[in-house]
Image (cartoon, rainbow, N blue to C red; front, side, top):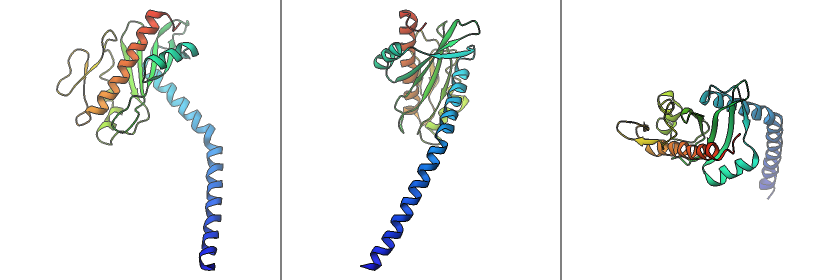
Length: 196
């Protein structure tokens, strides 16, 4: 019995020390991780709506309406120029891709054009759906009209369609569904006047 208790007690002590150390490291790095995440989000917003000088959050009530009515949209930011005039919106959506939620950041200007798209965190398959973070994929969205939905083409993209990633149609379609939900939310904000 002692042969079992002694190693068990040693293992318990090691686990307690390791858990305490991990907890301390997490506590010490949590603020830095949050700051890095916020900085990365700012870079993504600027990349998808480059005419904006700064961004403000959409009001709580309007955001609650957007999130409730236009899933998978989870966040909306108003882009303003140096004079404070609204130049467009940035939408964050999290549609379900092949490997789970895909963070899609979409910019739409006040003229109704998609100004850019970036992919944030995702669990898509390396070499397939993960190619969505490459410029060859996300640059297809810039200049598309927000007057109609964006489509996905497996062969050749025309009009408001984009070319799907070869072998990753599910990932491509998920990203497009996030963009199209953002288009719907954009129209509600612009036509309903809830974003200014």
